[in-house]
Image (cartoon, rainbow, N blue to C red):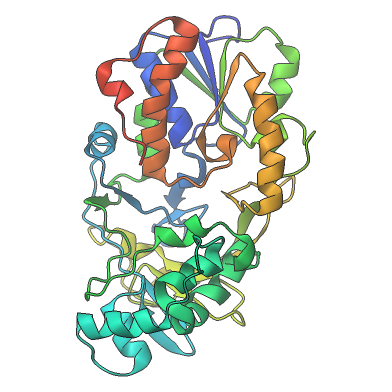
Length: 394
């Protein structure tokens, strides 16, 4: 057991960022104590079999692994093999099902006629609304500059209002740029080179990442309670919410969380695909996930399936924060927390919650691989190796 005094490094949070830091630190011979206030590792990627059907369900919403980084893919490949699942998105608007992200199929179906790529480009070009003399300042302006108002109103605006509980004019433009616009019939949601689901599920990845005898994992432990009893603790990599770390001294940041409604149905296939979004604002939920489709290589019940509806909402202090909303007022509050964070000489803030940054799984791993060289040099006197200094950021 690594007591606080015996550990060389404490990692708070056992999600992808924290687990990668812990694994790299142990590989360098350091004794690492990993604490997480949840009763499991894997963070929001945690999954487990549904007791009624045996189908693996992601407890905090579907996690679809994808990356174009060979370094990230090969690193994670040390801890798992992947199936060949590729996500083809669907969205429902006004009773019709469309391919998403917007591609040539979406455009042809929505406007009711077949179009060649050049004709579709010309149509969308005529509908685009580009701010004069400046870059788009928010999500709505960015979306209008990419796809025009008809497609924006049908597929983006209502869904965004539900997903973020925030007017799209108050959200940063970068949120919408995560979705490509294609003038081909390519219906893949992600364009990344590497995609798939871990064959043994996400928890198995973390069990292997944290398997070193130099790593001790303690679950159900709130570091913010523990640190009050150990003011002389070793250096800390903190991946929890940055505003909570400082006891909300500069105000509360805006976070989004999600409620889940799970249902077991007497059918072998409810919707024919893993995830279907519901774009219309009068539909209370944002999407339905049917988890059996994430693992077509597995034997699933022929007469039962499990679906989960998602209901996003603002996160309160006692909720698990999922995503930073990043409104203008949030950025002002964050700037003040970053000043405080810079004064914490023995604490490194990382991950989605610790930096208040929207990160996908592959981005969290890439940042941890990059950051570990800096952390190691700062606290343990070892400079980053050349391959670590060049670690990818996305």
